[in-house]
Length: 213
Ligand SMILES: O=C(CO)COP(=O)(O)O
Ligand SMILES: [Zn+2]
Image 1 (cartoon, rainbow, N blue to C red):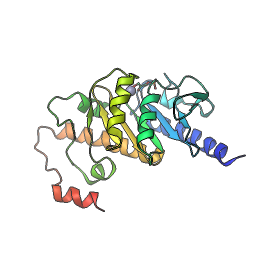
Image 2 (image 1 turned 90 degrees about the vertical axis):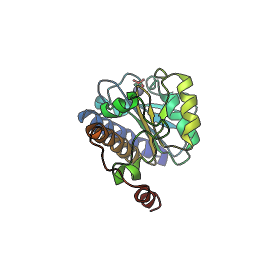
Image 3 (image 1 turned 45 degrees about the vertical axis):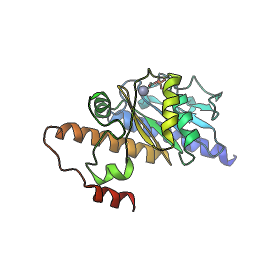
Image 4 (image 1 turned 90 degrees about the horizontal axis):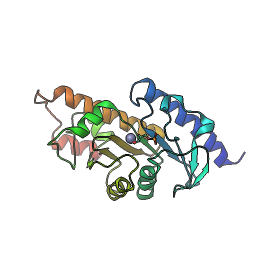
C-alpha cells in the first residue's frame, strides 16, 4: 500500500474517533458540525453533509481536492468551502474542526463584545491554544459570502467564532484543532459562569509571557 493510502486509512479512523468523542460529550449535537483533515498530497478528507459526528463511518467520508472537487464518497459538508478557504490561507493547517457547541454559540450571540477578540484571557491554556478570537458576521451555513469573509481573516487567526452559529478552528493536526476548540468551548462556559462576578483576568504581561514561550 502506498504511503498516501496508509495515511488516508489512519486519518479516516481518526476523524471517526474524534467525531464520536465530541458527540458523546455533547459538543456536536444532532448533525451539527463538521471535521476535515488535509492529507500529505494536499487533498482533503471531510465529513459528509447531514451526518452525525457520533455515527461516522470510515468508509463513508468524502475525499475532495483542495478546490472542492469530489474524488470519492458522499456529498461533502456544506461547509467544505469554509474548510478549503482556511487551508488555502494557512499552510500550517492540517485539520479543521467546526462545531455548534453550546457555550461558544451563546457567546457568538451576545451583544457588546469586542468583535476583534471576543473573550478575555481567563486562563493560560486559552491563551496558549486559542489566542485571539474574532467574530465573523452572520451568514447562513454554506454561504459563499461566509467563506470569503473567513478567507480574509484566516491568515491572521486560526480560530474564529461565526456569529449566531459556532466556532471554526484550524490546527496542525486533528488533535490540535480538537483541543483548541474544546479550550474555546470551556472558556466560553467560564466566561458565561463568571459574567456578573468581575473576574480577575490574566494581565497583559502574563499574556505576553505565554505568547512568547
Ligand atoms: O455545521 C453545519 C452547518 O454549518 C452542518 O452542516 P453539514 O451537515 O453540511 O456539515
Ligand atoms: Zn455549522
